[in-house]
Length: 75
Image 1 (cartoon, rainbow, N blue to C red):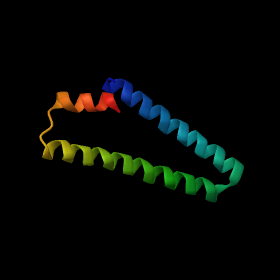
Image 2 (cartoon, rainbow, N blue to C red):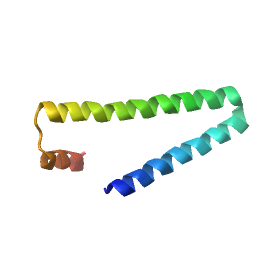
Image 3 (cartoon, one colour):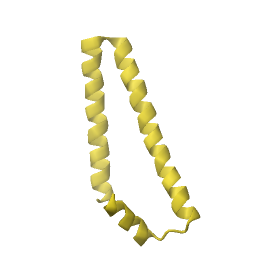
Image 4 (cartoon, rainbow, N blue to C red):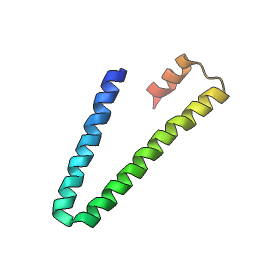
């Protein structure tokens, strides 16, 4: 996947979740919308944290970029 396509899909899902949050706000109130938003931000930050963990593992074991892509395709 290209970087441009990955950025597009990331923005798409973030906007979709914010629209969901607006729906929760109008359906269930401010407190539930705040809880959803807080949970979303925590999950998003943890997923970014996973990228750093993979980077550390690949660096530590000196895994070449070609092998990294091969592992990505297998999952």
